[in-house]
Amino acid sequence: TIDITDPKHTLTTSSATRTFTISYTGDDVTLEVTLSATSSTFTFPASSLCVSEGIKTDDNTLPLSGTSGDKYIICIKKISSGYYVVCKNFGQ
Image (tube, rainbow, N blue to C red; front, side, top):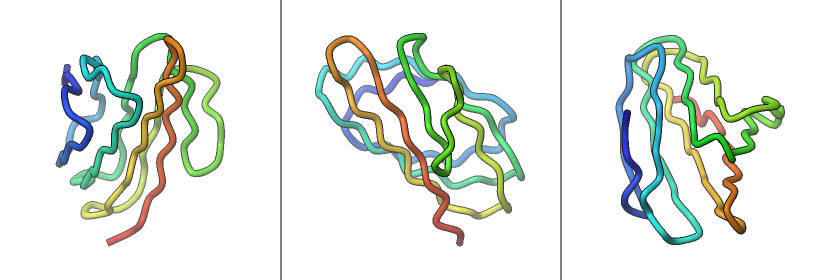
C-alpha cells in the first residue's frame, strides 16, 4: 500500500498490483509512473471512479499496460468525498 501525501509523486513500479490510500487533503494530485513491467493494476479508495486511456473501468481500479519504461501520468481530482482518477500512457 502506498499513501498519497503530497500533490506530486513519482513512482517506478514492477508490481502486478498496487493499492493507494490518500491522506493528502488538497483537491488535485499528479502521479508520474514509470512502468517497469508490462502491466500493473492500481487500486484507489472505494469512492474513486477511474478512466484508463479514455475508457471507464466501472470501479476503483486502474489497469496499466504497455512496455517496460513507459511513462504514465495519473491525475486525481477530489470532488466532495469522491475521487476521479484518469491516466494516460505517454510512451518512453
